[in-house]
Amino acid sequence: MKPKLRRVVLIGSVIILITVGVVSFHYFNQKLISIHQHFLYCQLITPEMSPNDALRSLKSIRSSDYIYNENLQEVWGNFSDPMTNHLFGGPSRLSFRNNQYVGTSIVVEGSTWLPVNCHGEGW
Image (cartoon, rainbow, N blue to C red; front, side, top):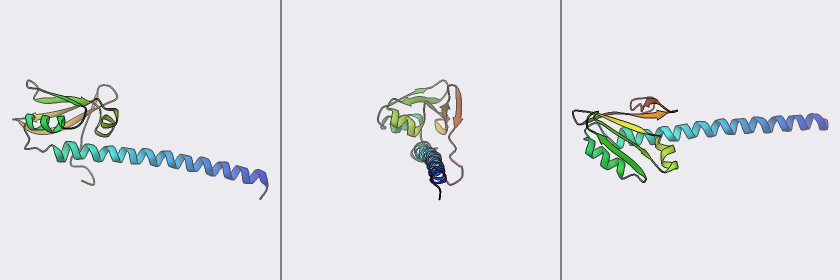
């Protein structure tokens, strides 16, 4: 192989490997976040829980700041630790009806709330 062609192949291979690495890292990071959110909001906090039980569970997690709004029947809060916040999602609100847990929404990009899907694929 000519030196120029060898160099082009080497640079092209490196670019492809870096791209694959970045895409794989992003995919596995999103999967890890999904697993953590599903564990916390779908398995640790169950439909039978009252707001006080849910608050107790959430406050047992390091650096959590949650409060219960009786008028809206929602628990609002966030995690101040950046790693915990990254794994479990940004500000969240847990909704209750008749003192029973209904579901969780997590804020995404400012003011858009995205529900945590407890019945999605793979669960």
